[in-house]
Image (cartoon, rainbow, N blue to C red; front, side, top):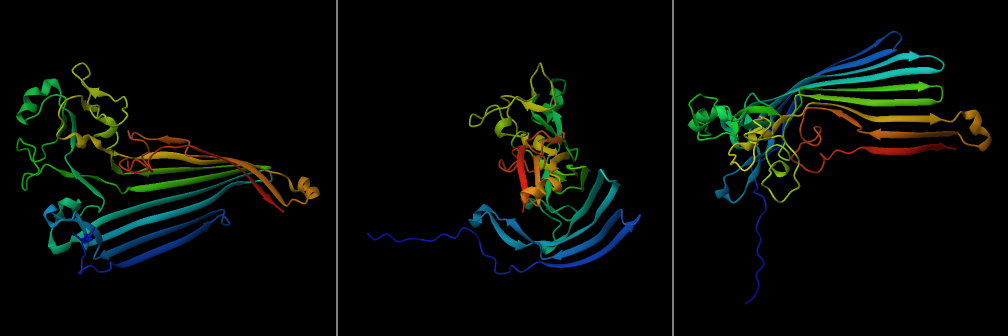
Length: 340
């Protein structure tokens, strides 16, 4: 008749877990030209990490989903470049630019127990630690492909995936797996550029940021949620769905079972963003002295006003499955810098 409080652990402990260990080599070069009107830094690096710590999936029979474990070795190598230039510098007008470039190659060198892959964690020797492993989309099955689609047990309007091993079937079975590494969440390279202008007492600056080579699983608009017209829990958006009168390859057919619909959700998330546009005016000091004011500057800043991308989600800078950080927004800021 007495209530006894129990305890159930939320995570599984790992007594063999140990710290990651890294060895890194860096080579840097600082430069200056034209009386340091142009300065720059180049850094090359290579970092090898042993005993990589990641969440490793477990069979459901264990009672837990994942365990934190040392799963292998990875390497990171790349280059970082920073250049500052004073393009124009006259009495009334100046223009300066800062450019940075970064490229990193992330690669799994070995996995625990000598295996080549841990498929459940999308970890593969020779590939990035942030890889996507799934069927590769080949558009939508069309009416003219009805016979071929039927040979795969499919029909027009369904997402078509690539039969990688050419055995006439789509399978994830060992030895017959048609899934491949589609891409990685890590970019191939990033470039940032800031330009600053001054004209007498006015100033203008803006930031440009380019990211290339990133892939995201766009579950929000690609393979479900708002993209799924049959899902009544969410608001819907207008997409170019396949119909017999609209034989598109953009989106699968409405009301048709979709065993591989997620294949269409893996999208390249390259983009060019123009952000942090700031316009300011600084009051001349001669006009401020009589008020015992040392500095007065008023400015307006616009954050994230423009982006150029082919990504079909909300914001390609963030993973489209988070639903929180990837909501696009433009922020307007008005400010005053006042000093005495």
